[in-house]
Length: 413
Image 1 (cartoon, rainbow, N blue to C red):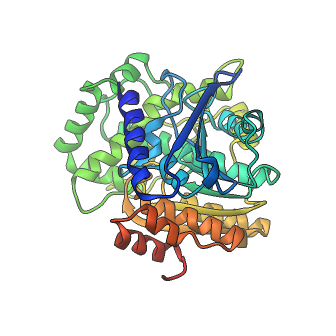
Image 2: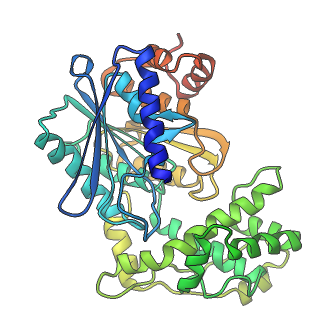
C-alpha cells in the first residue's frame, strides 16, 4: 500500500510540474532484468530532453523486503526527484538491486548495467551521465566514481560509509556491545548472533523490543549518557535524540548482521565485526568497561571480503561531490575526513568537494541541499550553472534554494 501511495505521489508531482515548466510530461518505462533487479526510467518529452541522464543508486533496504525500486527514497520533502530532473531536461533512472540487505556489490553491478546496457536496449544514448546515491547507494556511487570513468561523467554521494566500510561495521557492532554492557539482558542474542524472533519483532509495528530499549534508556539516564559518550554518537540538546540515535544504530545491528554475514561468506556465513583489542573511553569507569565488555574477533575471510569489494581507494577518476549531515547517528560524519585522507594519499583530492550540512539525522537533507549539490556537480563538469533553472523548477521556495546554493558554493544570482 505504501508503494502504491508513493507512486501516486510521483504522478501528482508530475502533473503539478506541467504547470510550471517547459518539460510538461514524465514518460515512465519500467522492467525486470535477468538477475531479478527491476528498473524505472523517467524521460522528459523528446523535444526538451537535454541529452543527459541522472542515475540514482538507492540506500539500504531490509532483507526480506520485495525486490523493487524504493520509491520512498525518490521523494524528499515532497519533492519528486524524477519529476524535478525531468523538468530540468534530464532523464532520470533508478534500479533496484538483485538482493536487499548488504548489496553494495550488487548495487555497483546493477547500476552500471542500467547505465550501459538497459538504456542502450531502449535506444537511449545520453551525452553525459551523472550518478547520485545515498547511504548504501553513496558507497556504490563513490566506488563507481573511482572505477567507472567510461560509464559516468560525474557523481554525487550523500551520507555514505565512504571512508571505511570496516569501521562502519565495527560502529554498529560497538553500539550493540556497549549497549549490552550498560543494559544487560534487554536484547536477546549477541552483537554477532541475532535471533530471528528479534529481527521479526524489531521490524514489526509496535515492536516490543524497541519499547524495551526506550524504557531502559529512560529508566537509566546516566547509563544512556555514557553509552552516547563512549560511542561519540550524534545527538542534539533535545533529550529525545538520545533514544532516536540508539534505536537507529541498533536497527542495523539487529536487521543487518545475519544478512551481512551470509553475504560476505556465500559458502558459509563469516563474521566481520572485531573489537578484540579495542580500547573504549568516555564512561564513568573505563577500566571496568574494558575489563568486562564482551569481545569478538572477526573471521579473516570476512575481513578479506570487505577489503576486496567494499572499501574505497580514494583514487577518483571523475568529479565527485559528497554531502553529509554533521550529526548523522547512523553513518557518522567521520566517514568524510577518512575519505579525504584517502584522496590526499591517492593524489585526487581536487576531484572532490565535500559539503557538510549542519543537521541531525541520517541523510537528513532538504531537497534544496541535494539539488544544489547536483548543480555543483554539473558546474564542475561542464561549467554550466543550473541555479536559474532550479529556481524556476522550485518556484515558491526561492529563498530556501538560494540559502542552499550559497552553502554549496554556487555562483550568486
